[in-house]
Image 1: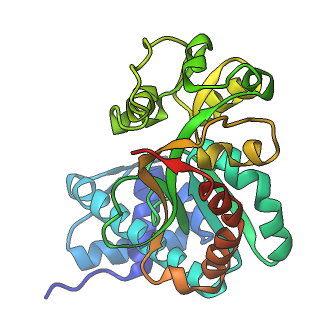
Image 2: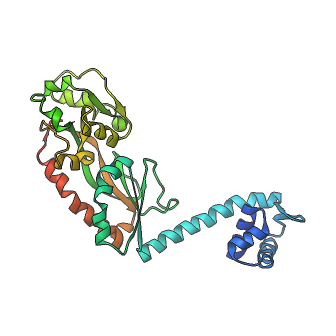
Image 3: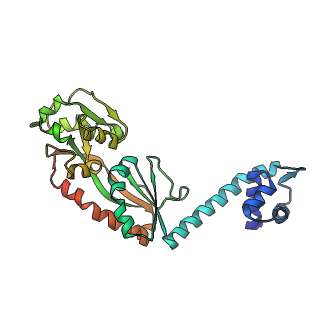
Length: 307
């Protein structure tokens, strides 16, 4: 088996190849240029050929160096990410969470101060995005994801089974006595559920009510919280999701005049790398989420599901 160059030599090569400068690489690694040059020569001795063209004030990769660099960079990056993930499990001094923007804005962020107050030893970081972040590459500990499919090879815990029902400002609700009264109001559309096709929109709710669906009109939003915000301002009626509108409903800023509710064929899951779910920091987060979800659970019990 061929001997691999020492780790210090590989690290020196990666930094020098990235900067195309021995001086800049030495500064990054906090070593002298002479020490870095020694490591590069050690790598070349192990390899049996030069990886840099040395010039007066610069260096260029040889053809061999260019072929070697991508694999070395990828390998060192993988090692660094694995080390960081292992350290996070040991120290448990920080917790990085990612969730969608709407869930973060309407459910997570407004109540996180209670978790922060109860866990002053944890440094909390958040990434509100719909992009599927990578646990290792993006240094994420826990993801709260909305969808129909579990993430294979990872810990998955269903925390919310989503539902939707008509919601509106209390002033508008005074005019609504029966479902057909909704037809006289502006309809607000939450297009964040279009990946579920027609299973969770206005058409689905009216069909479940055995009524003719209304014409597709009214403002459309790609984010569920923006659709709810328009309803909060009195701009119309939204088929609001329980998780997004729960606080507005319990505080009376939104009214759901009918008990009839449709189940959204999707769910929120807490997911993380296997094994991380039992670490103290993640376990504390899971316990806190369960406690905070009791209000939504109570609200769900008042609903009459029609699909």
